[in-house]
Image (cartoon, rainbow, N blue to C red):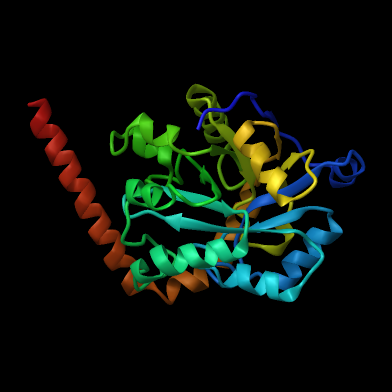
Length: 291
């Protein structure tokens, strides 16, 4: 979906009080809880978000327990019902719903039965199948960390650059995550440049797994509620403000996730093996075509 405006993106520490005083609605659009691969308690995250005067999009990997807990808590902090879907071919796709019940229904119909033995890793749906399944949903779709983490194909743009996907895939979604605090600055700048190339919107979030990360990256706009806030992303009428984590924080975040993945080592190895076999086949097929 093409936007009319180009969102302003600022690489600086958000001033939560100033944004609130300006009447801006701000949210960390990428945060994980104990319901996936984080140890962060939902209520504690919502409490800190409230103190920092920001909202929170709970985007656990393939799971919605954190969103359900947040809405059951009846906390005054505004919550955007979200999910980070891990596609079989690599990309992580952030989906934000206008209504929590729509997320629950979508998850029951499309995601639940396709989750594998490690629920936080790739589900049995590829990127195009996921986008097809979202075609009629009332939601906002953003590609998480588009340039991918390290050597992994966990970003849509990385998969496009490696010819797993075409540029038309990016034009089917609403936004790229242009500030992900887990990425390095170069990767975030590249994500921003690609969002401009495709004329799609921008989102930002911490990809936080630790409580202290809440709100360190925000998506912000003039909005009277969640509906207008999400609409503004589609229209490019928002800003993204934040910075990348330093090395110390990245190490701490990795350490906080390690207990979860240690207990899923066998299933993780199996899933990664199957995914890599698909990639090997892709390379072989590409080599044959070139020769």
